[in-house]
Image (cartoon, rainbow, N blue to C red; front, side, top):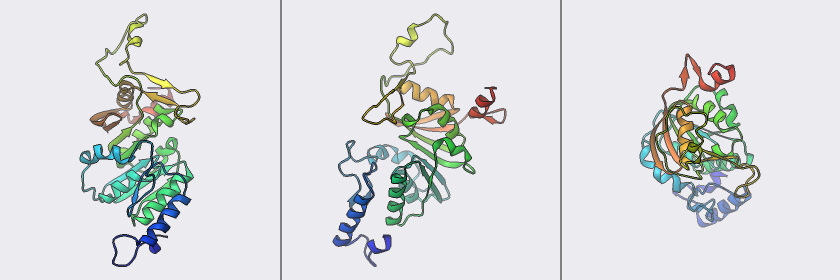
Length: 265
């Protein structure tokens, strides 16, 4: 498909090729990532607007323009937007994983059309610790609140972070944070009445017509869980996104989830 879409000497497909490209985009089903494939958008009517570019524009200056030699892991890669952005910056290895065959087909198609060498695998985030090695950049965008066991997944993801973790989650409730004490008396119930106390909202049924929306944190909970996973928050470029580096993820030679599973945390 890719070879048929690009014409020798042209930087973009002909109008007829654009029609064929648009048809193929439609055949791949509904897209959640709005990608620009030679002027043909994949999700032009997205309810969030130009998504996820509306997130990326806040991250753009936080990530080096030249990623030559860098390795990137894109968790829950969806249609491949972040994988594509990082490959365009010269990352030597980009791996996107997802559990949805439709999204993986879309991501592979987009990478082929754009002539970008990106690997995509069907793999659960709960299996991420089975991947070989670590990555200079790990993207964990828009996945956390879809997980029934979010902190367990975050602990496993942290194991793969050599350089930076770019983390994004839906936020609901208070977006305020404050310094809390390290301990409180058993009968102190007042702290739980404070809207800025770290809190996760559990969705028993559906939220936004999506049964995979399980746990949605407020800002304080998102940041507290990142710290609990041994991550240091370096930047908070937009309300739902944090850039972190591992600081205390390994204790006595073991990662936090390993200590927890062994009952020694």
